Each structure stands twice: as structure tokens, then as C-alpha cells.
Length: 143
Image (cartoon, rainbow, N blue to C red; front, top):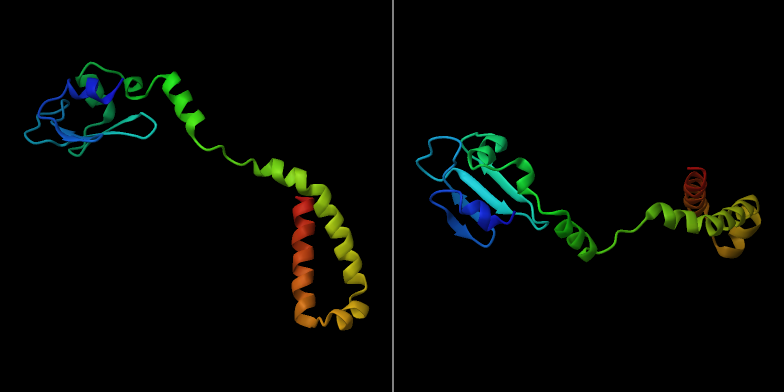
């Protein structure tokens, strides 16, 4: 159902651009205590600030809760138009062979640290950082 169809069933409607107020049909309402908003995904969001339950509101105008949601075709179109999400598990799986190779070389560097450190001008702080990175890499590969 679109928002216009819902609004025609309500009294004292005001607002624009997908954000409206109206009298709540579920209770004796003197002022507009009902908020109606259309979400980006086509859902109709209904809230009574006097405390009426959404089920009470929709049934008072002859609707069901499912009427507040767009048809599946609309949802499918919105999903297709959104930017695809990254599959981080797949990225990690593809990176595993390279990460394993890096871990093997890093372990060799750690074994020969005493010979390499003077040549590369590394100190004890560098070794602490290196071992932390190596430990993180091993955790990543084990997990």
C-alpha cells in the first residue's frame, strides 16, 4: 500500500514529503497525535504519541499490519538498487594463501632477528611491534 492510500483513511492530515500527522483513529483524538512516515524502503511507519498500539491504529482504518509493507516486487527493486555489500569471509578466504606465505616468512625473520636487526637498523620496540603483528596474523589464520 502506498502512503496516499493510508492518508485518505485518516482525518485532519497535514504534512508533506513522506512525513505526515493526523488524528489517531484508534482513540478520541482532538489534535494530531499520529505520525505517518514513509521509509526509504517503502515501509509505512505509524506511531501514535498518545500510546495506541500500531495494531489498533491499522485495524481502526480497516487495514492489517502487512498493509504497511510494500509488495515484494518493490522490496526486490530496492535491494537491487542498493550498493552490493562486501563478503568479508570470502575476502579472508581468498587472502589466506598469501597470508600463510607472509606468516612463514615472518616466522623466519623472527628466528633470525638478531642477525637482521643491525642490518635493517631495527631496535627492541620494532621487535615488539613485529611480534604483535605476527601474532595477529597467526590468530587470523587460525580463526
